[in-house]
Image (cartoon, rainbow, N blue to C red; front, side, top):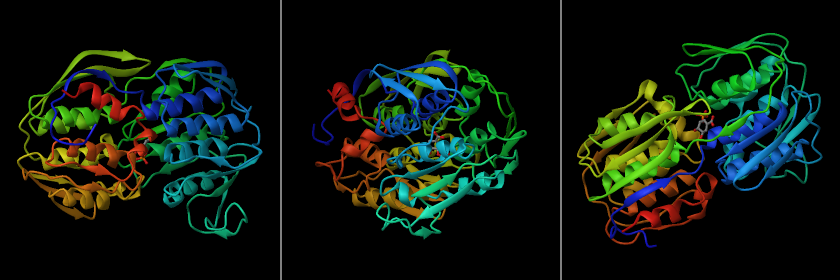
Length: 436
Ligand code: S3P
């Protein structure tokens, strides 16, 4: 399929399972007693990295494609890996597994791809060190041939697991990865551990760990966990990922004469900011058949072509749509008037610097966008034209600009289409199925 504006989009689809929930299912299953069975698991490269890391820690995991079966080793049943754990492109794998590894009686070395080697890890080293764990980063240019100490604060790094102390951590960032890392370390601590974040981030760890048997209490933006629970394997049905549904929400809204029903999508309020934004831009979006699946709210989302207008996005909303900002920027380019995205400085430390990369690509397509320190300002309504998109191997850039290209004149090309496999391996095929 060529990325041109020759199509309308009609029909129903189910997007793949939620990435955050899939990662957590593997991790929590691995440290529980008994079997965990995950259905609708996201078979994206990031979640496969999590599986492979836990297999190297001695956990038996069978991935049949339609489901994943984990034979849990219990809280203290992981074993020292004989090799470096490769986390690939996955920040979630790196930061969450580090919380678990901080409380082990062995040391583990983590490394990943070019992007992961640039992502900030001090945000987890700081609290996990306060709990007692020790970290050593290695010079990435000479690793693994030699291990030269580095103070990069990035992968590759070694975690020396220790007996941990419970802490109260005031996190400077609203990050579910940081929160989850500290909570997972808290499972191994000598007393209660709590985390306060400036704004509430996604709460899948809290929901799912509680279902496995951990004792967590949440009040406002603080969550506490008691150490040494006995965790029990669960059956988890993963809802569709709203971060993947976001591309079809945008596609349905901005493409004239289109109507898309996205079935079985997670709408957890800590994730559903894209729906709030779509409505505030004048989008015709309806939630049907709302229900709970494995403790997570789920709905079918019906989207119809709409005339969008600009909006302002910031504050508490940002963590609920942080991964959707590239595609929201594309929606804004097709909306009349100005859209301001603020308080989103975290975009700079995602798989790419998403403020810079969105700006570069939207400008290449003729869009009017000004990057700011903590977001971007987009003046919408100017027709876009095709461009060669520099994805920086960032899956969300590839998918967001595919949506833009499907509404731009000429033929848009991407320097790396395949990076969508990180979170959505069937993305292009799913678009093809809806294209008329
Ligand atoms: C995730 C949390 C978010 C998000 C990432 C997945 C998670 O990162 O961007 O794609 O599963 O916890 P931060 O917690 O660093 O904001």
